[in-house]
Structures are given as structure tokens and as C-alpha cells.
Amino acid sequence: MLEIISTRLPGNPKTRRRPQVPNATAPDQIFQRALANNEILLPKCDDCGAFHFFPRVLCPHCHGAAISWERASGTGRVHTTTVVRQKPERGGDYNVCVIELDEGVRMMSRVEGIAPADVVIDMPVTAFVGEAEGAPAVLFKPVEG
Image (cartoon, rainbow, N blue to C red; front, side, top):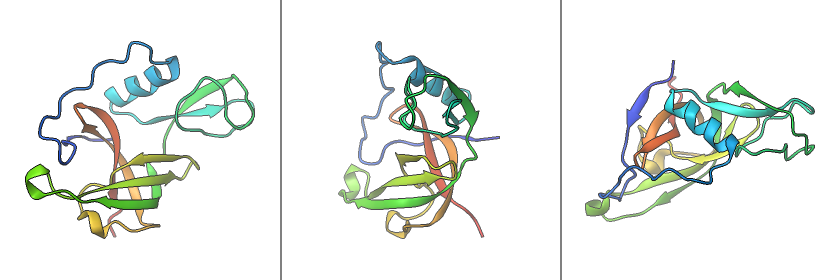
């Protein structure tokens, strides 16, 4: 089971809950509802079998419209990373990463629990549902061991 961890986006002392997007697509709503229930689901094309991310109505690989949702493995590796430098009074440094999940999709996120400069390319990570800017978000932490 995934854990809910409340974190504030570094450097933003005025973090507050994001307003609901009135024109969010059905796939976005499915993804956000799953996160609110502490689940990470990924869209998968029933026609070609490929996962994709970000959620959308048509498969970006074959343009099929038959999309189902599967629970993500939650494991992956850091594909790219950068450190955003900020003054300590603005929250200090933090990392922004692109994570490649074992399902083959990539998502932009953060690796929590270690110093931003210690996040390296190809580092194995595991996903959890945390909070960013007051809303549920997929965040990552290093795999122990």
C-alpha cells in the first residue's frame, strides 16, 4: 500500500491547494481520483498494449481509443535530474527529475528523502503518493539497499 506524505513544494512558503481545473479531461480526472485514493494508475492501450503518460483520450503509439487503467509497479529509475538552487529562506535547493517507470513511461517529479545533489541518473527509485502544492502527486524516493 502506498503512503500519503504531505510535503510542501520547496521555496514556496505560500503553497496552497490547487484549484480544480474545470476543463480537465476524463483521463486527467481518472488519474487524479486514483491519486486521491492513494493509488498510482497508468493508462494502457487495449489495442497495442503500450502504457503511456500523461493521461489522454487516444493512445500516442497507435492512436487507439480503447484505453484501460492498470496499477503502476511504482518502480523505476532516474532518467534525468537537475538541482534548482534557491536561498535557504525561500526553501533551499530541490531537485526536478524525469523518472522512467518500469512500464516504459516517463514522468516529471521529485526524489524525496535525500539531498538534491545526491540524486543521480540511473538511480533506482520507488513511487509514493505525496503532496505537492496542496494536491496529491506522484513523488519518488530512493530504493533502499
